[in-house]
Length: 112
Length: 111
Image (cartoon, rainbow over all chains, first blue to last red):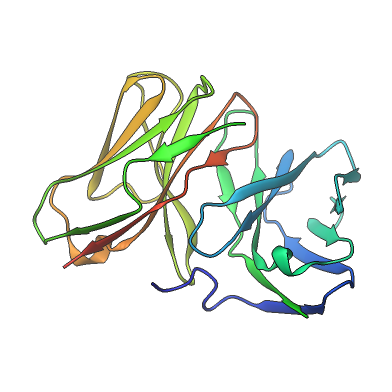
């Protein structure tokens, strides 16, 4: 079947390097942000989230940075592994009961 | 672990058929969502529900309807399938103000 990764920008990194995936969001009133990972043939998987009262949040091998001044979100993956190859989406939400708005996604390709 | 299951991974239907896509979540989440995902267009929200028997239109509700008779189950209905509804359909659920958890998706082909 046709891959969700078609027509998306691609980031290619060497295995073991750090990856930085960037996302520009649209609404300055958004108060909650999420990063998802989607592997081929699977549904999106939650990676990490951050609320607008924070600038940085760390998980296992991943860090999310939020710059509200320029409406920019980034996902840093340390020591990138082949299993990190996937499409990555950012999502923003405005208000606790609002819908999520998803970015188009970026394909991360890890070179062995 | 949160589990969201969808009734079929792959489905092939003919134009004009009525199609039911079922989604079940096991985390007692209030909120449930149906999206479609198409290459180059990303995830688009079709319908969502904040409670049993409640439904709200998303960004692209035309040609679809939904049903939520029980908290754990959210059904998407294509009343008369058309070829432009060929897509990957994703169901998600969430607690209030929290991240959404997605099912594995149903790839629907309408011929």
